[in-house]
Length: 176
Image: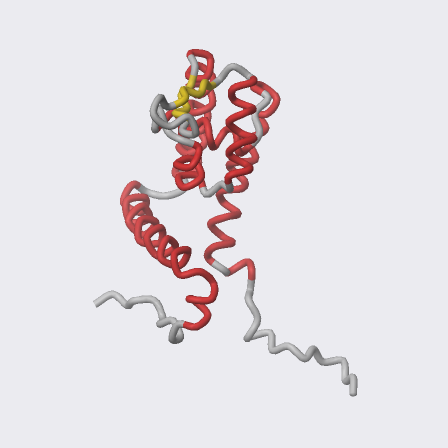
C-alpha cells in the first residue's frame, strides 16, 4: 500500500552534506578545480599528470609503482600520466641497469619550471584557504588530519569487507 510515505527512515540514511569524507572531498575538489583551470590550459596537463608531477618532484627517481602508492592512482592512470609528462618534455625515464622493467622517473628542467609555477599557485590557494582559520586552529586541524590519514590507511588496508564485518564502530573519542 502506498501512503505517500518513504519506506526509508531519513534518520537512518547517509546525509551526504554532513559525511566527513564528502566534506573533505568537496573542499579539495574546489581548490583542485581552480588549480586545474590554470595548469590544464597552460601546460596541457591532466589532473593525474599534475599529481604525478608533484610526486616526482618530491621523490626524484621514483618508480611508477611508487607513484601509484603515493598518489592513490591506479597503474593505468600513472602509466598515462607518465607518458603525457614524457611526451610534453616534463619528465624522463631512466631504465634500471639490473632490472629493465624498473624505470626511475625524474622531472626535466622544463618539468621543474612548470612544477615551480604550478606549485607557486597551489601554495597561494592553500594560503587563501587557511586564511579562514587561526594559526591555532590550523595546528589543531593538521593534528586531526594526521590522525584521519592514519585511520583511512587502516580502513584501506582492511577493505570494505573488513570494515563491514568489524564490530560496530565506536563514537568519536571524548576529550578528558
